[in-house]
Image 1 (cartoon, rainbow, N blue to C red):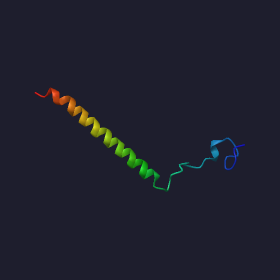
Image 2: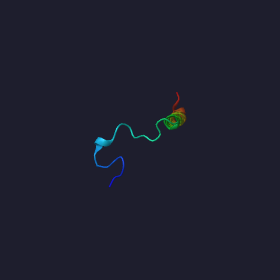
Image 3: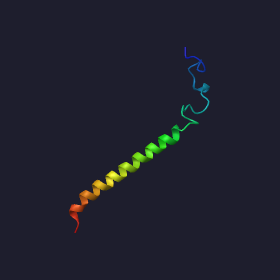
Image 4: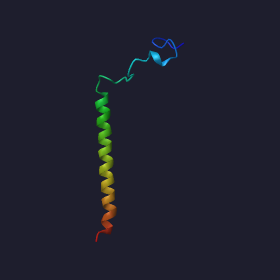
Length: 58
């Protein structure tokens, strides 16, 4: 019903990680994309907050 290597519906047949991208550039690429997005959000947030607070300088 499940095919090789899952002849039974049991987690005992799973040996370790089942990550398709392991050993390729995918983990590094995904990390780089996430880091770029985080930096972009921080820069955008800082810019908008600075613009809002510039109205209230003493």
